[in-house]
Length: 165
Length: 204
Image (cartoon, rainbow over all chains, first blue to last red; front, side, top):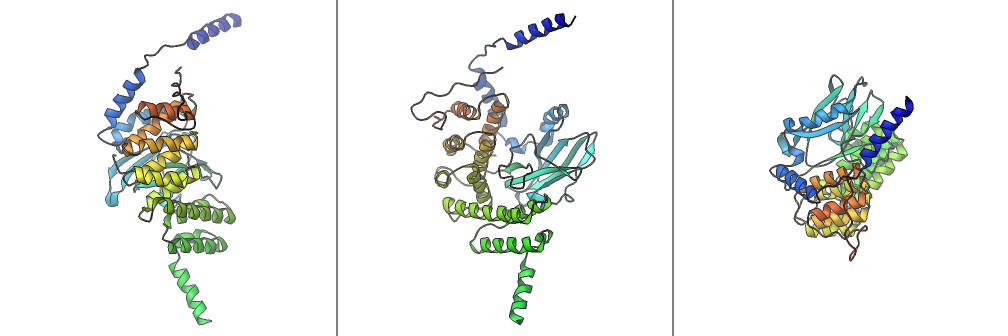
């Protein structure tokens, strides 16, 4: 019985390993569509509604974070929503340059394991991380990592730009 | 005696209250670094934030001081390379780019090649290196994109490279191929001048 299953698995693997021929122009066309879709506004400044597919994808993964701007505030600051899917967490705080690395400033609210909060970000490069259960530092798996992790805990980076966005 | 006491009081009064989260010894050294940076005309907020990050993460004082000093040096190098009119966000991003392996020469070339602000270009450069793209390749690509690409284009470029890497492409090749797709001739380490362009990564 197991041999029969192994044979099926082998056949599936062989099918999956078969080379797939792709039109060499497909990549350029896809990138063109993406570029034309993104042109009117920065991908980093889309309304929250357009980031919902990200949230759907996040729900599939164990922990995925999405940071997307929400609304424009004063002093050139944008409101960014940060989301972390962490069903097992009892508490999550967003901590970074924008809140003086104070875990009490941006506690995240949860709905069925999806943690979220909104913070104002001014233009510039901001380092941040998530503090889970008050003890565990987590980087944002969907954002660039900060290279200068001199404190031996992971941090991520979000950059709020200006020109052409 | 009285003068010394007054100076100490003045220093404490001028000290950023946020730094009270540091232990007294670390705080006094961080304050000294911050004061010297301020006197040199460098932005001090990134230094304060680096110290606060260390405090929140429970780092030892020596490590916090070392991190703040190193960032001060990087900000100074960045300011020299980018010029005295550089903004604080530009210098902060440039410090990250330097840490990633960009050279001061590249920062100066970016300043010449691109209208300000340079914040996003510098940040994308640092992010590409963090994704595994060799520093010289990332530098070459960002410098080539800099004259005409908007911030949104740079962000999209970085995301495309990250997608390719997540699909298994070697980071240097991913950056090179994406650069070729934008129409620029890539001359980074993975495809030096005179070399044929790298093949696009095969898709599963």
